[in-house]
Amino acid sequence: MYRDFTNFGQLILILVLTSLVISVQGKHAKPFEVIVGGRSSQVEAPISTPIAEALKPLIFADQRLAVVYPIIQKFKKIITSDPLGITKSWVGPDICKNYTGFYCESPPDNKSALALASIDFNGFQLSAPTLDGFLDQLPDLALFHANSNNFSGTLSASIAKLPFLYELDISNNQFSGPFPTAILGMNSLSFLDIRFNFFTGSVPPQLFTEPFDALFLNNNNFMQRLPDNIGSTRAFYLTLANNKFFGPIPRGIYKALASLTEILLLNNLLTGCLPYELGFLKEAVVFDAGNNLLTGPLPFSLGCLEKVEVLNFAGNYLYGMVPEVVCALGNLANLSLSDNYFTTIGPICWNLIKKGILDVRKNCIPGVPFQRSIVECVHFFQQPRYCPYRVTYNFIPCWLPNFKSPPLAATISDLAPSPS
Ligand SMILES: *[C@@H]1O[C@H](CO)[C@@H](O)[C@H](O)[C@H]1NC(C)=O
Ligand SMILES: *[C@@H]1O[C@H](CO)[C@@H](O)[C@H](O)[C@H]1NC(C)=O
Ligand SMILES: *[C@@H]1O[C@H](CO)[C@@H](O)[C@H](O)[C@H]1NC(C)=O
Ligand SMILES: *[C@@H]1O[C@H](CO)[C@@H](O)[C@H](O)[C@H]1NC(C)=O
Image (tube, rainbow, N blue to C red; front, side):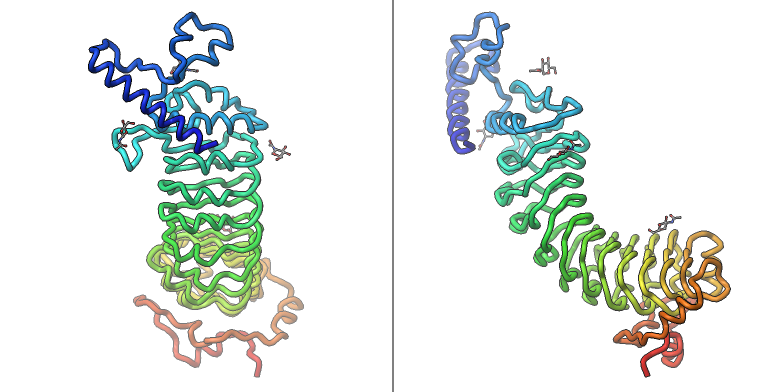
């Protein structure tokens, strides 16, 4: 279908060029009213019947728009619900001016051409069983935003051949099936937002070695060990929340230190102790690992995250002291540690509780309101708990005038009962 229309398009182009040549040679007055479509002679008569409308030749602003026109019309036919009446505007040849949600621009490979460059269907509430045959057939597309529609199906591997696509947002739809692995081959793609869908299986680790700026994968059904190479990402935003990622947070996460700004890992099944290497993520503004199965102490190194505003570890099995160096972070607006097994806080942290910044409800801290029962706390600490690389927990890998890493003896005494 697409191939046929390419040929048809070339024919149109030839007709346009021929007409232009004729216009120039014959000094016609209106060269821009060249009629394209090959049926011009029959339809110069008055046009009011539907048949005449249908036969009316289509004059496209550019050959590239003639190519996408039938693709759009075909997609319009498979839309099963359009409560806002969006597709009513998708008629006639004026795609750039008339079609709600469609935007044109000069494509990178020809500055004098006009092409369908972006689609913004955000919030249109359209339903369609698939985007195949549409999205993957719009060769000049750079942006596709279709947040909050009711599109379903899987994502065709053929989107990989769109040379200019750099933002793909299909969040909050009904897509299912495996991760669309085909996108890994796309050099241009830098923004991927597939959150709030029903994708299953696992995310290929190569995703983290490709140069994405943003990877929004939260609220799907991905189920896998958190890939070891996650730190290879150059993304600023990495959201894996509300899936079923398991295993520890890889120590190699520190490699993403130059870019990672927002990291959302909440509501997964992550286990193990927090790697002190988290303290190297100096660009982090939001780090959220709430509601997992993480254990061990909070590394002092988190006190080096000088840009951090939101730190959430609520709903885990963390224990020990809440490091004063973390409570002293200058930009902290929300430190959520509720629903863990912390046992000690110092004066700086107390002050944050009073300010409503630190939440330590449901822990085991004597003298603080809303703590767990003694029975619950005793029960928790009866089991031996152990984290590897123990000395790293009190190590502060940055220079802070008011804090220095405590001596080794303090390091050991701060930890919860160890198996001995
Ligand atoms: C396209 O929009 C113009 C105004 O911008 C309007 O006059 C014209 O009727 C529209 N075409 C169709 C086919 O709706
Ligand atoms: C660029 O686009 C214009 C307008 O569509 C077209 O006439 C011209 O042939 C194109 N140039 C190339 C090199 O394709
Ligand atoms: C979304 O599509 C599904 C079928 O694909 C349908 O059952 C459901 O009613 C649609 N929801 C809305 C809000 O249109
Ligand atoms: C702090 O973060 C927690 C966890 O994300 C959230 O539940 C809470 O509402 C936030 N508190 C404030 C005051 O924003």
